[in-house]
Each structure stands twice: as structure tokens, then as C-alpha cells.
Image (tube, rainbow, N blue to C red; front, top):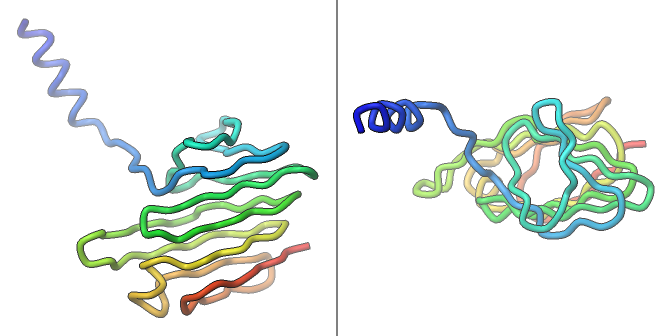
Length: 140
């Protein structure tokens, strides 16, 4: 009994990665790279900070984040979720993605609406600040 209690306390003290979003759509060749592993993207798969979303020539991924940001990733894309912090009480946070290649459509959520500088998209040649609304990024 004591051993079970000690193990339970230890398990609760371990850091847990917080879910920041969820795959809503996955078509064709689509995966999520997480901690060196490739997971098949499928509806319901949780997205964590640090994940990279990858699609092949026939792939697409749709994700909804906890701040209600929606992201659609087109074919031949590689998009990393570099940083995501969100406080649902204050609706403040920070959201930084890195688009290495491909196409990305974003409909911004609460993070971008609460702070003009809170949402950014990095590309190999630019850093885009998101001021709310819907936008498209294409990286050759």
C-alpha cells in the first residue's frame, strides 16, 4: 500500500506536456513529428508545443488550437509549432510557428485578438506578425 502511494505521488510530480490543439482533418500522407518519432496524423490526435506537422504531395492537415486558432496545412509542407502559451482566463498568450516549406492558412484565435504582437509566423526569409483575421503563407 505504501509503495503504491509513493509511486502515485511521484507520477503526479512528473512534468506533463499540455495539449495545445487537436487534429481535426488529415488527408493523404500526413504526420506529426514529436520527440524524434513520426506519428500518423489522424483526427483526434493531440498537438503539443514543439510538434512539427508534415505533409506529402497528397497530404493535408487541419488543426484547431485551444485558443480557437484554426490552421490548414497544404501538400508538401513542414510547419513547426515553436511556441504556444495560452491562459484561457485572460485570453493572453504567445503563438509562434515556423513554416519551412509548403502552404499554411490560419484563421487567428484569441491569442492574436488580445495582443497585436502575440502571434508570429517565421519563414526562411521573413518574420510575419499576425494582427488577427485570416491569412495565407506560402513557402517554396
